[in-house]
Amino acid sequence: MAQDSVDLSCDYQFWMQKLSVWDQASTLETQQDTCLHVAQFQEFLRKMYEALKEMDSNTVIERFPTIGQLLAKACWNPFILAYDESQKILIWCLCCLINKEPQNSGQSKLNSWIQ
Image (cartoon, rainbow, N blue to C red; front, side, top):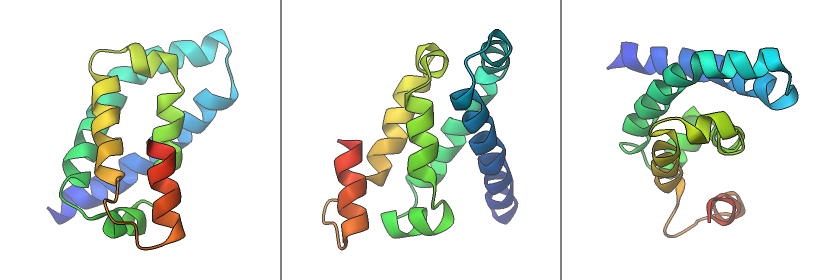
């Protein structure tokens, strides 16, 4: 389990960087790179969902403080949304972040953004 956690953290950083590049450039090369990697990204999302559903929202934010940014970038990428089950898995991940009883303004803001 500890190795899975390390792997997920490394993958998280990799995909955050990829999404930032994809978000900033809409060239043919970027689109081709997105299409080349979208299946791998979907698998990462699936692993992320499996991890998120086992954590409370405080733990999620502690381990992945930029999770909202990562998911938002993915939500705005039409190639990701159109691929296989990615949209469904993204929604599952977002649902894991909703805090039924927000304890602070950060949790309230996250809930508002997700909704």
